[in-house]
Structure formats: C-alpha cells, structure tokens
Length: 102
Image (cartoon, rainbow, N blue to C red; front, side, top):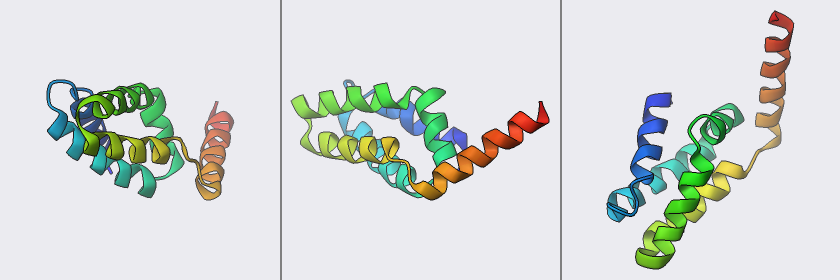
C-alpha cells in the first residue's frame, strides 16, 4: 500500500480529540494494514510518521470518550509493534543491501 494512504490514516487518527468517530475508522484500517504489511512499512510508520505516539494518544482519547476508538487503537498498536520473523528477515535483507550499496 502507498505511504500516502498510511500517512493520511495516521493524520486522521491524530485528530482523535476533535473527530473521534473518524479516528475510530482510521484506527480500524490501520490495524488491518499493520497486520498485513511487512515490517518495513511498520518500521517506517513508527519512525517517519510517529505512529506509535499518535496511536497512543488516540488510545488515551478513546479510553476517556469513545470505547470503539480505544479498542481499535489497541488493536492497531499491537499490530504496529509486533514484528513477525519473516518480516524481520526482509528488513535485515534490505538493510544489508543498503549497506552494500554505500
């Protein structure tokens, strides 16, 4: 999936305080995307898009005001921080290729 979709969903999730319902739908999508994508996308989301902080903030908003947002944010956070073995191998291979190119 494209980075534009990912960054848009994270941006919407970051507006959880103002629009918790939209953030809920964004969190649901992110949970599915993070589960299905490779480690490189999750890593990019964590580093470049500050996804961990944003999902955490949405989880806090959800726990105070929107139960479904809290649940969806929790699922997205677990998927974001969970690295599977195959994806870890892919990231290591990418890093090795980048090192060799330098």
